[in-house]
Amino acid sequence: MLKKTKLACAIALPLLICGCQSSSTRIQPVGVTCHKPPPPAAWIMQPYEPDLTRRMLNELSPSPTPATVD
Image (cartoon, rainbow, N blue to C red; front, side, top):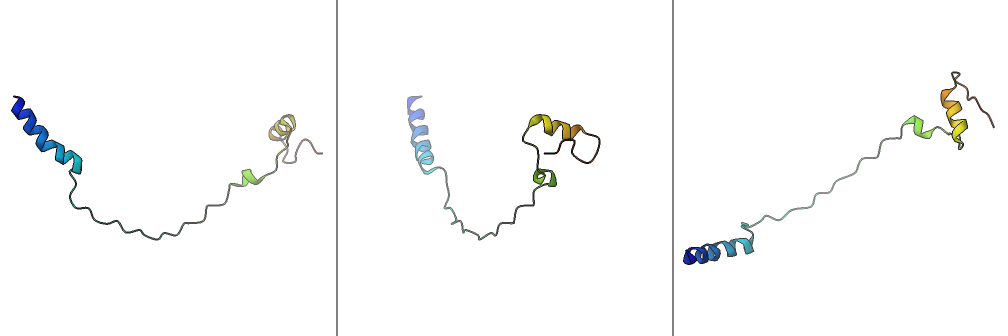
């Protein structure tokens, strides 16, 4: 039993050290151009009131014009 374990270790150890890897091919780097990022959504670019109360009034007002004006 001990002899079989030693034999198994003697076979497995070199395979583990080498990583069971055959000759690897060299990876060639490929030049890639990056695409431009898409423009942001329109709602991101809209100005908003710094005050939370004014912001809520503008969001909840039924008219298209802001409820509060500085």
